[in-house]
Image (cartoon, rainbow, N blue to C red):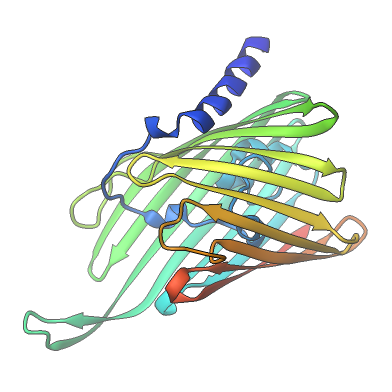
Length: 305
């Protein structure tokens, strides 16, 4: 176990220091898999790989399914550009030192104008994506967890469609730096089959590494993440959440290496509201800047049982 932990830490540092090892150019299918899940993670600069301690862990880092002792169900809805809507539902269930989860994500493009060869109006068509994910996490000891997730993916454009399968493999390692509790996370995500519709393309596979620090226990969390995609530019983010009280949390973040954003546009922000003795009911909100295209708003609701 000692050597596994050493290897895990080495890989985490390596992917931070040598991101170019994974960077390539090209196009991918099912790009909706790159969209962040959950308003909490989105408001923290999309830096959640090293935190991943709620039901959305099935998307971020399935090793995080071991983090909680309660069952959690959550749903997220987001408005995007040109009438595109994105939503997901996920559930995490603990059992012993292990945890499992299930999630469904969809993207609906709405109606899109169809143009003929001579730019004649030929009505409209729709496009959409759906992904179904099953995940499992296991705690190997008090400070080390591993997880995996498998995904069924479907894309439809007008009358054409394509399906594919993918898998994630992730880990979380908790330690202390000086006196601060630190958690390191590494995930290999979206490795699987090529898919259409039309000409088949690779999925947006990536190596993602992150860390979170409990600066003030139960009050202030800080996180950072770096994502190196196989066929697109690497991105990164930092974020923080501050628990003002037992019922209200403020969150902020910043996204790096986004060519479409400039100035203060990479800033993200949001809040969380809780009710019940053990935060039984949750409401999270996030806004995200899409540059010249405006703001995207995301709302998540959840319950812990």
